[in-house]
Amino acid sequence: MPRPHTTMRKIRDVLQLSWGENLSLRQVARSLSMPHTTVALYTRRAKEAGLTWPLTNSGVKLVMIPLTSKRGKEPVFP
Image (tube, rainbow, N blue to C red):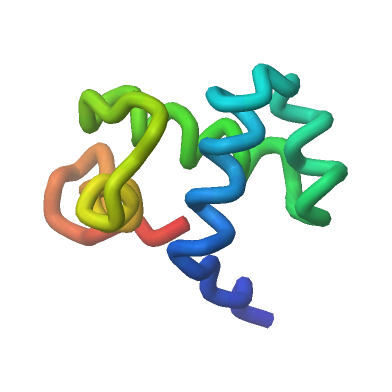
């Protein structure tokens, strides 16, 4: 069964709670009912994109861009 899509709003909430409110990854995951590994993935992607809090909508779009796989050919979607 495929994973449901994560909305930009949900990603913004992850970053707000993680960076703005200084909650741990597990606290953020519990409050948003999502796996802590997904929270870690979005915060890592945001850091790699050079984003800081507060965000703009264009910043959230950067986090949603899929990374390439280790082989470098197929996109990897969260």
